[in-house]
Amino acid sequence: MGSRFRGGWTCGFAAAALCVLAFPMSLQARAETLEAVLVEAYRSNPTLNAQRAGVRAIDEGVPQALSGYRPKISINATGGEQSLSSITKVTSTTPSTYSTISGYNSPAGAGITATQTLFNGFQTANRTRQAESQVLAARETLRQTEQNVLLNAATAYMNLLRDTAILSLQESNVKVLQEQLRQVRDRFNVGEVTRTDVAQSESRVAAGRSQVLTAESNYKTSAAVYRQVIGSDPGKLVPATPVDRFSPHSLSGAVATGSAGHPLVASAEYNIDVAQSQVKVAEGALLPTLSLQGNATQNFLVPGSLVTEKSYSASVLGTLSVPIYQGGAEYSLIRQAKETLGQRRIDFDTAREQVRQTVVQSWGQLEAAKANIEATQAQVTAAEIALNGVREEARVGQRTTLDVLNAQQELVNARVALVGAQRDRVVASYTLLAGVGRLSPQVLGLHVPVYNAEVHYQQVRDSWAGVRTPDGR
Image 1 (cartoon, rainbow, N blue to C red):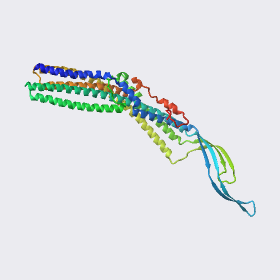
Image 2: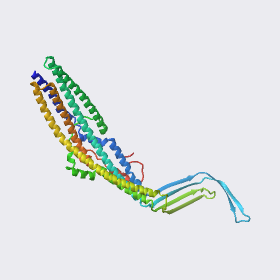
Image 3: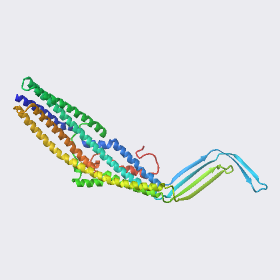
Image 4: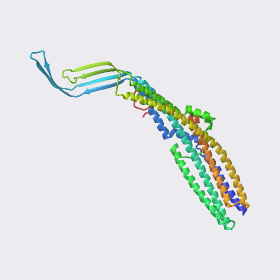
């Protein structure tokens, strides 16, 4: 009796262990690494591509601001039919006489006007600086989006890897429990155990199947999130390694790095520059405006005259406008801009505190994940030893079937916990790297062309005309 009991459990547990050990080996057969997944997300993630397009749109604010330095030229033309009748009093005769002129003609004319602003209270220069600061802030926002996408991709990858392993563990557990149930029924048929032992085994099989269904549901959810973030269906995933080597080696260093170089902090700093420039633009409305306008017009059959066949006029005029009072709106705009500037300075302090909090939290999570792996590894080792001991004790009648089932479940739970701890370890390292603002393709060494926002900016900055974008659209 004892030999049959021991042999059944040895075979069942060996099958479960073989399945768990074979899991990473089967993944390596078709390697889809985390690095490859990050490359795919960096290339094709729609959120990231949309943000890149947004930065390109903000680039156009600089040539729009620079247009204030350039002349504005327009051509106008007139043409049509006119009917004219006029009565003119002739006072050179006594008594006075009257001369009447009436008729129809088709006047036409064309002219060109050019206007050049010479001084507008430095508004053009300040708008240009403001637009350039907006471009720099948008690039930092893009960098933050890149970090979010890469972190989401790493998290989705590790979640799917974890849930795949857990599903494999739970399926193997059901196979072991089913084998145990068969053996217990055989022993019940020969009178070696009671109906209670059979019911206990049946209960554990049903519970194991429920855990498989839960694990399968989690797997499908993770696969759906993976496809949403990465943009393709998952293949066989291989285990990933942490990226601690790219992060500072101390908490104080991590906080300093994050406070100095995180894109949220940099973006908030550039937004202060934007607000300062807006104050200067608003103040410029109180200063004089000086402009130069040239005009040339050629008319044929001049409108309003039946006797003038042709006329030509040309002029170059300077215009000086000194604002005195315009209803008070300009003063309100200045006050509003100053309040916005104060808000942006507060936002900058808030961003630094937010980054610091994120770094400290991520550092704590990473340290906890490291310790948790050691604890769960010790838990797995202890659970394996305990299961072997309970199995041997059951062989000599000192343990019951329920004791063996409990030891088996504790081992499965320990292995599930270890899988979760390994996932947390990798994700926490990526979270910390993002927290200090260094989660980028360059730092990770990804083999992918890095998007350079400076290229498009230089292509459009000094553009004077044209409606086609640099990519041909």
